[in-house]
Image (cartoon, rainbow, N blue to C red):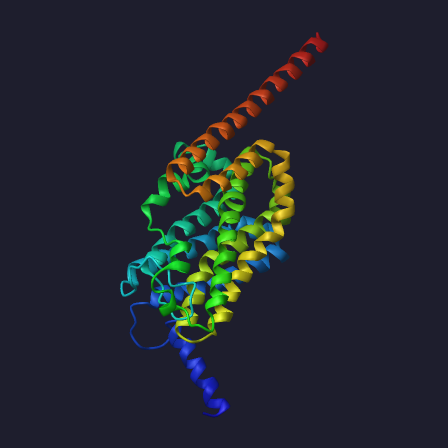
Length: 332
C-alpha cells in the first residue's frame, strides 16, 4: 500500500467512523454527537482562555455536559451488542467494552452536568423547591440515591478476573496493571476530593467566583473530558485507529492533569477543616468497601455541612441586625 492510498484509506475510515458517510448506520446520532462534543469541548476551552464572559454567559460548560450526557444515553440505547460483563473491558488491549460500563458512564455524565449547572445557576436553583432538591441530591447523596440505579464495574475484577489473560496481551499486561492502579488512586481523588469535597466547599461558599476562574473551571473541563473521552478512546482502539497504549495513556494523562488543582483545592480545604476531615474519613471508609458505612458517612457529612451553612447564615443575620441596631442607636 502506497502512502497516498494509506492516507485515503484512513480518511475514509474516519468519515465512516463519524457517521458522515452515505451508508446507513444506526449509530449515526451517537457518532455525530461524538464529533459535536469534541468540537464543543475544544471551543469551550478556547473561549475560557480567550473570552471568559462569553464562556459564562453562553453556558458553555453546560453545553459540554449536555452533549456528554446525550452521548452516554445514546450509547446505552444503541450498544446492545456489547457483553454484559463485570470486566469493563476498558483496561485492556484486547477486551470489548462492557455494556455495564457504558451504562455506568451515564451516572458520571449526570454528575458532570450538575457540576456545570450549579456554579453557573446556583442562585436560581436555590430559589426553587425542585432546584433545592437537586442541589442536595447531587451534592450530598449521589452515591446513596443515584448510584444504585446504575451497574458497577470494579477495578478488582478488572485486575483479578478470570478472563484477564484473554483481554490483556502478555506484552501489555504489566502496563494495564499499573495504569489500573493509577486510576484507582485517581478514583479516590475524583470521588472524595475533586468531587464531593469540591461540592461541599462550593455549597459553603468557600470556593469563590475568582477560584472558579483561576482553577475551578479548568478542573471541571478536565473532569468532563476524562468522563467522555474514556468510551471514545476505547472505540478508537477497538477500531484500530490508535495504538492501545496510546489510547489508554491519553486517558490516564488527562485524568492525572486534574492533580494540578491539588494545591489550591487543599488550601481551600484547610480553610474549612471540618470539610477536610469529612473528606479524609470518606476516603478511609471507601477503602473498607462497606456500602452501609459509606452511606452513613455521606448522611453524617450532609448533616454537618448543612448545619455549618445554616450557622453561617444565622451569624450573618445576627451580625447585620446588630449593625443596623448600632446605626439606629447612633442616629438617635
